[in-house]
Image 1 (spheres, rainbow, N blue to C red):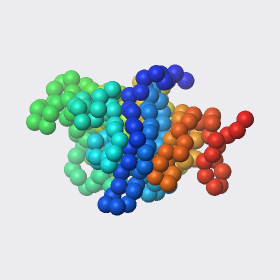
Image 2 (image 1 turned 30 degrees about the vertical axis):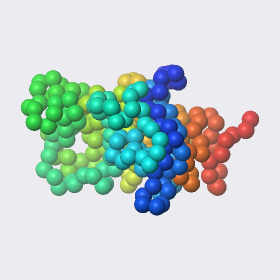
Image 3 (image 1 turned 90 degrees about the vertical axis):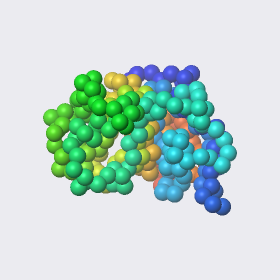
Image 4 (image 1 turned 180 degrees about the vertical axis):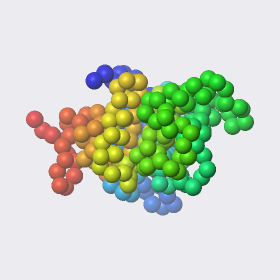
Length: 246
């Protein structure tokens, strides 16, 4: 297993609070994400974990607190190609949309290209590399709607990889995915983390999977961060997550 540079925080969340109207969703959340980590951000539905993700990605503005990306305040950060994002497929994708696998992955190059620039030979090369990383190169010319759910998830990861990010965020990536497909999916993420030294952050309610797959777990409960440790300091009981005392 590769080592994590705990001296290098590429994402720093400090005292973040957020409310929808008068309803408090997050309160004084602090979180550091280190280069090379594989982090699971877990919590029950409605705990605020997806809201935290959207704040980190600049999609929501916090009520108070700050976010730093690669040492820069989020308000000054411009190099978004360093950050990859895989949203929930079931919410964000229409299987009837007439587009090929290659075209979907090429969308991941727009951060480098700009929307109105023609893809170059180098861009197509990066698309092929990304598809090869997820073992989907042979499907380049297939309509994305013809693929299985597990195959589509690999394509969406390739789309994120095409921009050559240093960190990828995935929002509930295994919702509706069968068990055997889920196992292969987690193996893919493990390989990307190990071989590319890609920092991976999964936002999920699947606590049990994170306990066996991730290096570190951050648990959000009652609108705040209650646990942020390595897997070795974690175990699961029927009433929730607690520290292991040894």
